[in-house]
Image 1 (cartoon, rainbow, N blue to C red):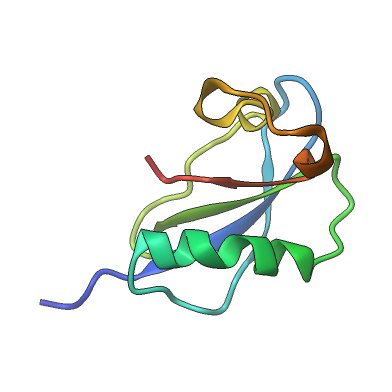
Image 2 (image 1 turned 180 degrees about the vertical axis):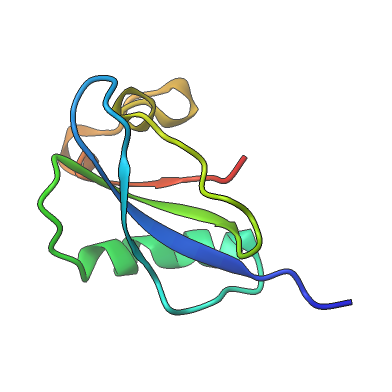
Length: 94
């Protein structure tokens, strides 16, 4: 059985209920979702993507992308992202 690998998709989100658009897939593959999540801040900081909100979505390499809406990104886990971090967020595959 092959090990489960995770990929990081970079998404650009508009405002309101508009769907986020996948703009890149990070070349690295991660051994766990936790390792992928740990790498999101540095990966997002390296990119210059012109969207109001840019997020990283970690998911299994064999999984289809999950559709996200901008309104979901503004409140991951039900809370608000602190103002200084609104441009960047990591979204769990759960």
